Each structure stands twice: as C-alpha cells, then as structure tokens.
Image (cartoon, rainbow, N blue to C red; front, side, top):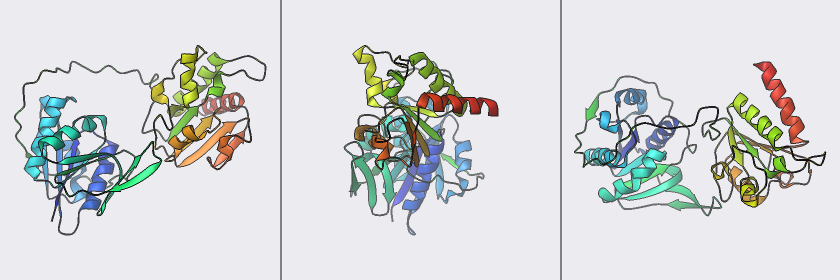
Amino acid sequence: METILFLSHANAGKPALETLAAAISLKRDDGTLIVGLFGEDVQTAANQFAGCGAAKFLGVAGPDFAQARYASDAAAAEALVKAAKAAIVVVPATSRMNRIVSGVAHRCGGRADTHVTGVSATGVTRWYYRQRMEASLTRTQRPWFIALDPGCHTPYTGEPGTVTVESVPVTLPAIRTTVTGVKAPEASQQTIRPDAKLLFVAGAGWTKKQSDGQTHVPEAAALIMGFLNATKASLGSSKSLVDLSGEGQAVLPFMSHLNQVGQTGSTPRHPKGLSTCCHGEEPHAVGWRFIGERRAINLDPNCGWARGKTDVLYVADAFAVMSKVNELLSART
C-alpha cells in the first residue's frame, strides 16, 4: 500500500484540477490519497477538492506563503511531504511548483521527474528530443515526485464541499527575499495565453512583399492584434518570423522568441489552432502535435500544411481573410 500525495500551491487553477484527477487515477484499492496545499489561504481550495476521496487534507497557510518564493515554498512542500509520509507525490507543473520540485525531492531523499505527460499504475510517460520520442518510466526510489504538464489530463470535476484541513507546522529558514509586488503587462498586451481555446500562429509571410510588391507590416500588426483582442486567443510564431529581427528586417512589434512554437520553441495544447502565412515546415509543425483541431491559411496549395499536417487548409490571402474575420467579429460585438 502506497500513500499518494497531491501537492500544490492553493491558487494553481486548472493545472491543479488536472493533476488531482491524475493522482486519483493512481490510487489503488489499498492505497491512500492525501491532499497537501500551501498558500495564504488553503481552505477555499481544499473545499473545492472535497469530493476527491482523500483520506485527509494537510495545509500550510499564512502570509509568508502568499507569494511564490523558493525558500518559503520549498519549506512548506517539504513539511507536507514528510507529514503525509508519501511514497508518490504528484504536483502540477506550474512555474511555482517547477521551481521547487527538484529541491524538495532532494531534501526528502527522493527522485523527481518533470514534464510528465501521462501517469498510470505502471509508470509515467514523457517526451524527449523536442517531443519526437516518447518514453515510459518507472522508479523504485521513494518518494517519487511527478510533475504533470498542464493540458495532459482531464480535470477533476467533483462536487465541492467543506473539509477539515490539518495544519502542518513549518520552521522557515532565514528569508532573504522580499516580494514587494508583481509587474505584469496589461491584458491587452498579453499575447501568450495558455488557457485560451485557440492558438493563432503567424508566419514570416506577414512581413514579406504582398501582391502589390510592397510590405505591409503595420497593417499586419493591426490585423493580428485586432483578432487577438477580439477572441482572446494565444499568439504563436514560426521560428523564421521571430528570427527576422536579427536579420535587420521589419518585424511585428509584439512578437518575441517566447511566442515561438515548434522544435526549438513551445509545444502548446490548445483545443484549436489556426496557422497563417506559414508554410508548415516540419520543425515548426512538430510543435502542433497536441493541438486538437488544426487549420491553416496559405496562398500555396502545395505548402507543408497540405501534406497531412492540418485538418483544413484555406488557399487564400491571409490579409484578406483576417480582415473579413475581424469585420465579422466587430459586427457581432
């Protein structure tokens, strides 16, 4: 019989629901599931998980754990793992948990596997070499820490309720970092939205010469941002587009390497994706393998997207198409 601990900060959102569902699937008939939470207030999150079948709920709460900080987060997570006497610890792979999971595993004498994409009673799976090879892993070392990537499991949907959270004492080390606030771009400037239902990807064709022999980068920027603001879609890019700045060419002002999707970029997991002015080359298209429904707009009917890499290819001018789409979206609002 092994004890499985679902461990998370209290405000992890949807990734926490997905990871909790994965932890529940690991629990065998003779196993024990424990929920461990840390943050300024853990009761609200614990109540949301009331129907998960956990044997008990453990919590570390207080102002010291409100903001993400390695020293306090690691101390809280270590205390929760040791209080639960957990053999397997499943955590959501948020930036806050990824920062501490390896260090906490070391403190507890365990091992950690990150970027896990699937869990089962026989082991875990994850991708290597930019999502080109999938590996199945098992470990005899305990405790075993498993960081599950967001978007890889169906979220927990149990009914909320009221639970009793057992407080776990923590002795904080000397804190040398003070969180004074958070600086973030305004919502209108935010282009990377992991929870968006649609991924909109722009290729280098947006900055090339168009049918009139001229470039129209300002118009391209206005069309793309207009669509993103209207739909709240997430923005992706091909490598060729984000590399243009290093070549001295005109670039889209809101595009950076953080938007890059593909072999040398990110591998998002949005339900739908729309690629525009991109030829669908393999290094870029490999980042789309977890997109549920893929569509592309390109003037070339023989581009890479037409060769089995997309569900629907629109052979059309992306400028004209997106202009009409934005017009329809504006009329609907």
